[in-house]
Image 1 (tube, rainbow over the protein chains, first blue to last red):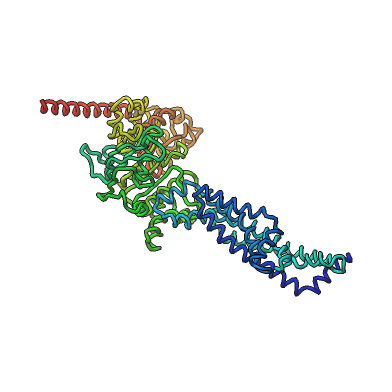
Image 2: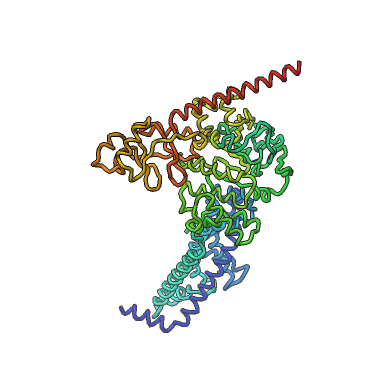
Length: 218
Length: 406
């Protein structure tokens, strides 16, 4: 009970930091998601009819995901320095695979009969893509975005190690100061707000998914 | 099918809308062509059925016409214009296309689905809206009920109707139909076939229809092209003549047994004279009914309901038993024929009906008459006579030609 009270006290004292670091954390996730959606969906569209290219693209994205996360943040420091960029690049590389895989799956799952009739009515390749394939693949793609965003939110806590900021700062603080007073409160703050942020993103994406999925396939 | 009187099929070739000139298709990686040097005239305003065993190239042939498959060699002439090298998307917007799996767009409403080609052609909104409603009505679906629904809410038969409406979207002259009723249960299929024929009688589109089912071919085709491997034409003629005179053993085998019964598919109920069965209406007195029964050759009277719909078969015993009101006496009339149904359907129904006759009703269900076995027999006789006469004429003509040559 005492520890809970002292945690609340800690959060009261550090509320400015909490808000600042949460926004910083959220900004990473948001920017990374945008960049990853554009790349992964774009690549997914390009490789959808080319089995070899598709396997290569999925393979590369999978390799990104197998690099230990700590290493991925550190690897780019010699090239881009500390702070924002190594964080952004590492998270971006992580975010690609779920979106790419779901884009490819979603586009492949569009019924051949639907595509055949679209072609048979004289829709051009581009019209078929934007008016038929993408709307039908969209729910699957956005499910991939959801996975990506949740993953990125969690991993972004590592940014603190490359001076990238974010809620990881609270966590690192504990490592540096344990067992000094409020060091445990600090890690709990970082963890809980990371989870809350992830839940907020999740709810937002669920809402976007509802709004952007055509009624006929909801 | 539309019989000879319904779509005039003449002996001389009608106007050609599409001409395939020695068209061949060899798929990459295969040596045998799928379609080998096919020359085919597709007459305007008729249903031409391509029928043959699976793998004979009939689907490939159909898809060559709108260039879903590009020919390896040969030319495709559409309305006098060589379209072998034009932009295929623009060509396809002028040709309706219906496939077995229909392929409605699940994310678009019924109205949006039907509007696909008009939209591609850039029609304005009001015109598209009117056209969608017109088409929905044409295929027997209430516009205000179905316009805003999605394909997942439709039954198979309804989806197929929408598929046809969508293909007719921009009022193309030509429809290509690849086994359009193949995936539908037999009862619904039969109804859709009849509806489609009724529609075609009004629209007079040029239709190329692919099926592997010879009975469907006989029913739907003004002309039938029976194809063997590599899309070689084994016989191309009206269904009547193919049934009466198969060109060779292949065609004979493909037609299978029961040519007479199949011939009955070619005659529609509305083409024969209906027999006037003695009928009574609600409110008739038992004495009156009895007199009517005694003066007729039948054992039963047909009771109509307030809307002139056939309701019950009433016999002598029913009339003599005043305890049961007539409206509840006797046997219910179970099956009704419509004028568009074929005589084969009529035979089928007679065999099932208690009295060996099939009741014919109009589209509102009102009684029109009955078909009896005698009606069918007379029709078979006349068909056989016509076929004999046609072949006699052909033989005579051949003989004349031989004499002229010698």
